[in-house]
Length: 55
Image 1 (cartoon, rainbow, N blue to C red):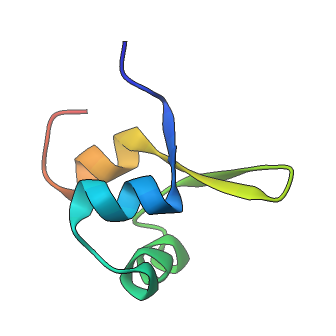
Image 2 (cartoon, rainbow, N blue to C red):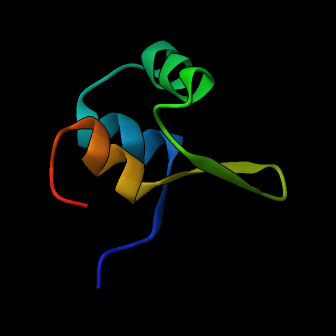
Image 3 (cartoon, rainbow, N blue to C red):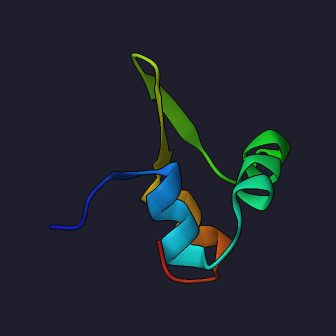
């Protein structure tokens, strides 16, 4: 089973994008996140959708 979420660092590694771009995509609503305590986690389905992979 694939993970449902990943960290910002994990999103950077999966996409090859930098921190500023990841946060810009989050701000634009193109990457979905959830907050757990102080951590921001990116939903992996939104990363797949961004990259054009089947969700």
